[in-house]
Image (cartoon, rainbow, N blue to C red; front, side):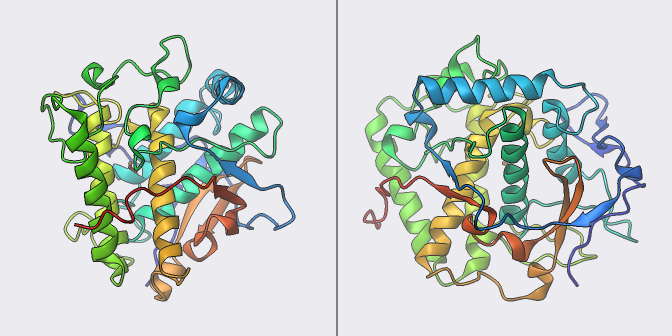
Length: 344
Ligand code: C2O
């Protein structure tokens, strides 16, 4: 059966093994009292939001993005749009603050075919809320274009210490070094960026090639209502690759705040740029298959997640309503895809 929203009155402590004590509070504000409605996708007549590559942001783009983030950070701490509350949503659904409805089984959106759709919605609402805060309904968030050689660095705007985009928990050794898809936790910077870039492109290329006819390998394997996500975890190759960027941005040693850990990852604004590109990878994958649905299984299509939308309304969002960025009123500004001819 499809996954349904949990009983909102039954939020409990979540677990983060990096935290002391490991029981952490990730319950959203006032969920128990909020009334839920079904999500309505934006109308095709609404203005299109165009997400651009972070490393190509000009000063105006940066100023606008920073202004929106600063406003989100300045909201009262228990407001559902508050920056910290928005970051906590990731903990809520990733560290098990809820059980699946009528079960003792944790609700977890990683490690299965829910990984890409859940994060797509998460970014969608984050973007809409930011746009609302600055009164701009064309506002779009940046993506970290880590699949292009020039984008294989932390985008510079995140490195300005005075910016609300800055996060001091990151691995300082990586501020200026090339992102290595084969990075293993704590490893030194590679002496020469060139082979790293080549290896990255080859990895992407083979990832797409190997999964092209097997969506579960790219997206993650099925998880159905009642199944235990901790014992049946089966992430797709897209999620596995995405984990590398989390570890590479986060600190090299324990405790792994912020990006290095589910509970805290979204406190770092770069999280949303990273996931922008993860989401874009899904879009590229979907287009490469002629926009065919990855799964026709109603257990996927009718599964749903809840979010607070840009009107502070609690909405129930089905996977079937987020299958393309266009259906949610945004697109990715086209960037060259340098790895499509880079087959191993
Ligand atoms: Cu919810 Cu990058 O993980």
